[in-house]
Image (tube, rainbow, N blue to C red; front, side, top):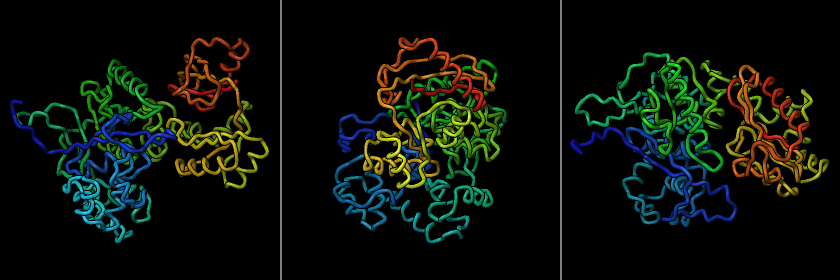
Length: 478
């Protein structure tokens, strides 16, 4: 290097181990490669970048949370994919740094930083709803998210957001300086931080934001990156200036020359809305990033963000299992018998009436998470617990699982509910294998013209019902 680096930022990378997907896999991590993806978080302090990275790896985690796992010393000694949260619980339980170093062999410098986070969490919890500006600002500088602060004071994310705006505690947008301040940096690598006093860039407005898919995981990876890149290129060809939000260093969409502005940031309502407020864009595209952007569609919409493509209400109609199943019933599109889960007793009764096996379907989940086929009451109870854990705010639906059925995948692009083009693929395996793992063949080999016609009609009906603008995909069983 010709000049010394300017280290005014801190990067934390964490791999994603998707070990929960497998039943008989050891959760221990060592020198053998087990990760399926990685995240990269940028902040101006270790605490800030570390908490961001934890949220990026798993969208159900709010940060360095001491209430996820219980303290077990053997889990501190042996690294696992969840050891961080055992560590958080141990710090909360007043383990000393010396004792933790002995057990984990994690350098004391890191342990001291982690203790700082947990100590401040205690301060926030003691404040309750009487949060003042100093405590809120320090929390943000230590990487706490609005949701995390809301949980600590028993409030809601929006209330904390409003309070933050009243106190004028807003993030600053900084640029990564690759030339150590020797001359003006021209890279468009941007990140948000609360440990700053000014923005590094101007905001002319009018850009189009594309939201990426976040961390690679089993069932969701490079295909969404390809969509995002295709979208950025097409927008550029049409003469639009583009902004990309993604935090996955393995993707093409996070190459600096792919877009006009690249935010290496979390894909959460809080961060995307902060970027939206700062950039004042012409619109935001969520349909290229798969499940994560869809999860925040309604929240962004409620804050009047201008979403391009299929409307968030329609996205909610498709994602919310109850609304979707009801819509199909109204239109007369056949589906296996189903029922919304209200309590375990009614679920068991439903299963008795239709007979096992039954399929447990949570709403708004990534790549079939917690979606399981139950073969007896015990299975049903276990899977329903897992499903309601994953989709806390959204309904879980149970439906009859048809064995030995043929599964058909339909991919289509529509404009204002009118299909422009569609492709039909046939699964070689019977229904029940996740379409991310299944073998598909197109054109379909074993479907007669009558069935194909029916498929086309159903796809047309659903596109019209949901008023789809953009890509959509669905699975049918025949």
